Image (cartoon, rainbow, N blue to C red; front, side, top):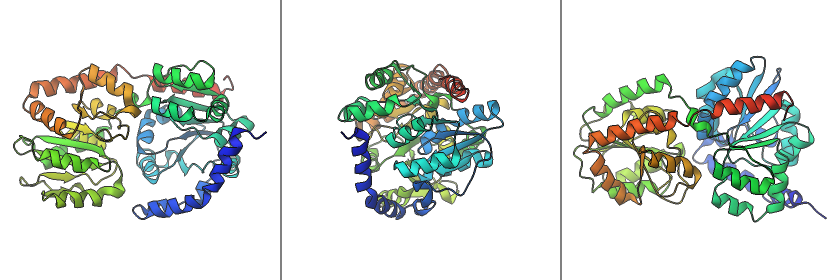
Length: 422
């Protein structure tokens, strides 16, 4: 009788022609998808001469979330090599910006048995760490066969994902049981994961709370604020996704805020030109951040077409809307905005960050809105109430500070794996 992983792998083989089409399609807007293709099938030029601690961070958000973890591991294990694997070019670029030559970075191979086995034979990691929702069944099985401890840390499993996994219970249970350890972000995540694992799942917290705003970005934020106009009210629309910008542009025409400047930073850089064209189609005046010029008093919108400056944008605005939440896309991370004391507005669709959003709203650091017109309504109120904005900003800092500590727990669990104590 075939095991569930056989059917999973068979399905991947059927999708192999699509893999190349997908890379070509994505490369239309982001040429980097055609770089390092061999790595996606387990072929690597770079080698590690030291014992390897391997961390997988999919894209930008996950890479920023592990900054303190990487720093802590480098201090604790100076004779080890930190290997970061990524899935997207933007994640890889974020790694280069954040860590430079202090780490080795590669693409994680697609989850074909031959590719993941090549990856493991090439780097021979002492321990591997998957973050949040990264469950790759052939990779997990290969690590299990090679006796490589593989941890799923700061794991999250939304109700939506749990329902999807429930369609393949044998496959998911077999994969999770072959992990050396699963540690969840929240009690809710732990309960949902335990249902599949058939074992207790500890709660370690969310690594994103341990992020420290880089001083250089805070200083850049001050300079950006001067460029934007220190006396102008500034709304930041952060990490917006396709379809949201049009909703925001339509609704913001009804904002009753004199000299309001809106800074839009799309989540994906390949959409910068698309969003610029959309703003122009609405007949609105716009400047690009990449022009690095003072913003004219007549300019209504700034397009944040730069990489790695999100902390600076948060520090330069009066209030931030967190994208991915106006449409059913699951939301984005609001913790970075709170960490610099920026009041937050967030939409109704936050299932990827459900508990963090609920906690931030309960603590007074964020306000949840129902739709774009509601956002404008609340914006009109808040930007005319500086005391309320100040209270929300301070509540955000306290919200982040009171939930820190996950990095320490992650380092302890990785140490147990390195010492073969798991």
